[in-house]
Each structure stands twice: as structure tokens, then as C-alpha cells.
Amino acid sequence: MTRTVKTLVSDLAFGESPRWRADGLYLADIHANRIVVWRPSGFLDVVATFASPVSGLGWLPDGRLLVVSMHDRKVLRQERDGRFAIHADLALIASWHANDMVVAANGDAYVGNFGFSLEAPGTFKLAKLARVTATGVVSQAADDLFFPNGSVITPDGKTFIVAESGRRKLTAFDIGARGELSNRRDWATLPERALPDGICLDREGAIWVASPPSHELLRIAEGGEVLDVIQTEQQAIACMLGGPDRLTLYVCTSDSTDPTLCRTHPTARLLSVEVDVPGAGLP
Image (cartoon, rainbow, N blue to C red; front, side):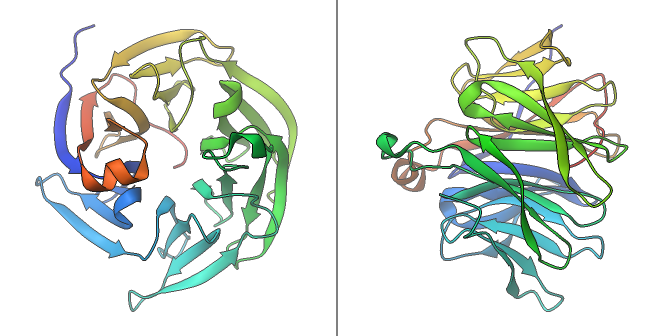
């Protein structure tokens, strides 16, 4: 199928964690230390700036924004006056930089972390996943994850699926009545060429996976069948099904993942492409 891939923004430092909200597409411009929103009118507005990199985004049931502050391993909460307060400290769970996050309908946030420094491979360590309640209480949701990255929650709120970038697979858990995760299982293993980063879920239960090394988006069925592929010029970092009908696949891409290069040469893009199956679940 021939599709038109549109470039919406072409001067980001490094876009991540795209989230569709009623008035636009929000994302973390990680290496510019900011959150921005792209609106269908074509404008890119700055929501907030920070002193250090931020990543995962989500909203509490009352509409307050949650943001992952990566290096100090905290989740921040934007108050009504626009200021940010510490919502949760992940220091006892996250062994390295915190990264992506999905927030459930009840306000529970599931937050991953690198596990170890990418600049010091000899420090390799599997990561734990944190669960943060709507009131900021932190607990361990899962462990032994190899670089947990993008994640989704199914429409019924009963299944959590996370991309394990280091294992090239998607891993599923049941979500219990109190938000606990259990019944860990393989949801899908990706082709050898691909590595899962950001992900999003559609109404047929398939997952779009952004794969940086193969410069593509793969639509994956449970079990691993590749249903569709969209190529990108740059590395595909993250994706989100949004728009009024959730039939627009928004994609964050980048030439590099090096923080210094991304800051000094902001060439990362936000793309869009129309698809046939609308988005579902969270984020």
C-alpha cells in the first residue's frame, strides 16, 4: 500500500513519547529539555522547559500533566498554576535514567528506566519497572527487564505491554485490581533487523513499533506476525495514533541519538501518515 508520509516539524533536538491530547500532539523534546505540542493548525508551542532532559508523558484523571525527569529519576506533576512539583521519586527502583511512561485511567503510572549507563556497557544491569499511584506512592511493578521502553495499556485496562529493547520483544503482563502486574509472558518477538523503542496500540489489537536501527515502523500482531511496514528516512524513535479519529500515525524520528549532536544539530522530525485502523487503549 502506498502512503504519503508528511513532515510536520523538522528542527527538534530529539522527539520522544508522543501523546495525542484533545488539542494536539504532545511530545518530549528530550535533548532540548522541553515539552512541546504540535497543533493541527501547524504551530509548535512550548509547554514547559526544564533544567535537564525529560521523557515520558501522561495525565492524571484530573487533567494534571505528569512528566518523567530522566536524570534525577523523578516523576513531576504540573500544578494548576503551571509550576511543577515532585510527584514521585524513583531512586529506589530505577538503577539509571528513567525514560518512558504510560498512565492508566485511574492515574497509576508505569515508568521504565535504562537499567545501566549506555556510555559504560560494562555496567550492564537488568531494570525494574516502577508503578506510581495517583497520589505518588512508588512500588516495584516488575523486574528483570532488558531496557524497558515504550508501553501500552489495552482498552479494557487489564493488560500492560512493554517493549524490551534489549531483548527485541514485546512483553505482556496482566494488571490486577490494585494495579499490580502478574502473568508475565512474551507478546511478540521482532524480526532480527528490528529493535522496539516507542509503541502504540490499535483497535484490532496490533501494535505499531518504532524501530530505530531499521528506520521503520512495524505493525505487529500478537505472536510476532508483521502485518505492515512503513519506512522512514531517519531512525524511527516513537509513534502515536492520534487525531480526532485516531487514524493518524505520528512518528518521531532522528538522525542521531547522541545528546550533544542532537542539541547542536536539531534535525529530528515529527512525521504523520494516515493508516486504516484507529488507535485504542493508552497512551
